[in-house]
Length: 359
Ligand SMILES: C[S@@+](CC[C@H](N)C(=O)[O-])C[C@H]1O[C@@H](n2cnc3c(N)ncnc32)[C@H](O)[C@@H]1O
Image 1 (cartoon, helix red, strand yellow):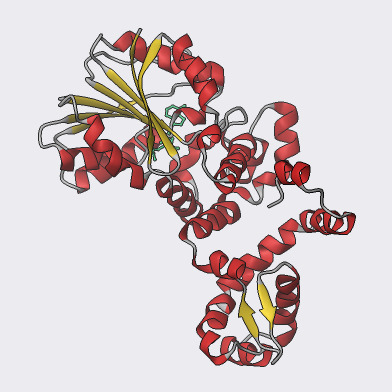
Image 2: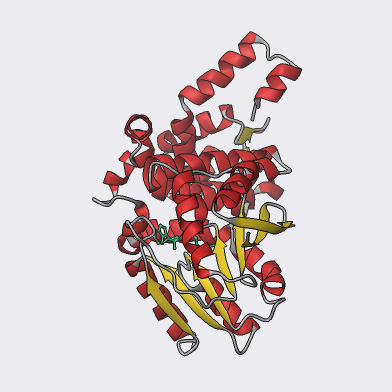
């Protein structure tokens, strides 16, 4: 990736800049080529033959029952895009980039999310910017936000959506549990509890805690079914809520209010509204946890790039008005809502955990 910083540090030669521009002009072609080569099993076969010095197009054709024409058009552009290389024996090998495209778990999750959830809807990005609405969502259904329809999406789309969501939160749940239970809470509200994954982990971690999941009705129903199936039905209940409705309410009584990757589903104004409702339900000891991946807290350029792409998913498909935020924005909104940040810590390589109390 050529970031602006590398442009300022070392200007590209015009010929290289033009090549970059052409790569962007045809980026969807390279992306779809990648998906095809992966799904058709070409990447796997090339990799499996690495100890034999690679594989010829004819061998690929025979093994995969695909025409040399079809394989040829895909492999030609894949070679120019630096995904495969053809060695002196005219055999194909994966480059390092090709290897990551096929075998890196995070890249795989991102490819599936791009292909199954975002690809068609991104066509309407410009319309989404003009109207402030998730114009690409019409590819899936007639909802105001993708969250209203999450539980009704096609299974394949759902699988890629949840895989993406879970990939970026599962790991940090483990790390966060110890801190969330440091005050020995007897009641925890999981706001945006989604599939009930965190609620179930809480129940496994602490034998007494009672969890209340807050989510949209369709999603909540699924979460409660998952929780009941796992045998935790007695300790987990749910409150159906739409935070975008005029007057959302939260009853008091929670020792911990938990929001993981939830507030980024809302605009700045909406975030202040949600947090203000929570403040009304908090007393002086209630701890409110916010877990987010902030754009300005990323150690690696490529993590920041993934977050910036995720913002466009929110714009074109999810709701038209939210994004992955920087921590400076969040700290301002938290204060505005009547909260103070007691702890601000890194969680794993990408996440930040803010522990807040009422001002
Ligand atoms: C990105 S998911 C986060 C899931 C989970 N907390 C995690 O860390 O993986 C956002 C959740 O917020 C819920 N949500 C989005 N918009 C909502 C709204 N308007 N009212 C209530 N819940 C909403 C979604 O249904 C979803 O479960």
